Amino acid sequence: MSDGITTGDIHVAVEQRLGRIGQRATAARRSLVAVLAATGAPLTIPEILERDDALAQSSAYRNLTALEEAGAVRKVVIGDDHTRYELAEDLTGHHHHMVCGDCGAVADFRLADTAEAALDTALAHAASAVDFEIDNHSLDIVGTCSACA
Image (cartoon, rainbow, N blue to C red; front, side, top):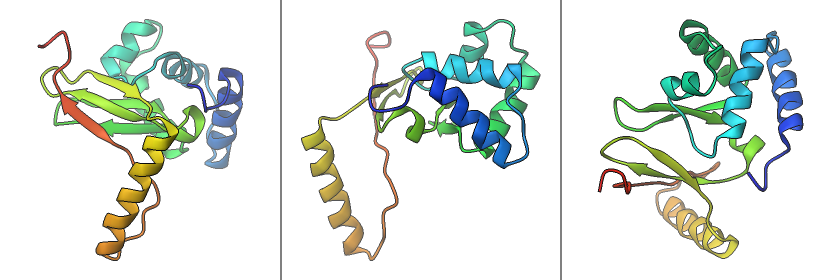
């Protein structure tokens, strides 16, 4: 993603984050990071396994949990049946999601800088009205993808 870091730097950053929590960057974890880095959208575990058939399902869950604890991976929960995983936004760049309410497909998108600034202003205004301090935001737009339409 354009305002994130390079794939090589992502692996270095993930290794450092894992080290901070006493974990190692194993081959399986590096593979998971590579799959997520190569994809422009959050993936379910079956989708991850389809992209790298050397990964075992049982270790994928465990390793994604470790990567999430290290702050390298973020869980994207959309509905009850569509838990997805993506690299942390500080590794890939700020983005939002378009979500199909029928099949659960997710596509990443970015707003133009002017639109992002307007969104930040609107959110800050809404937050101040209820005495809330925003750390960050993500926007999920739910609709119907072309395959389901």
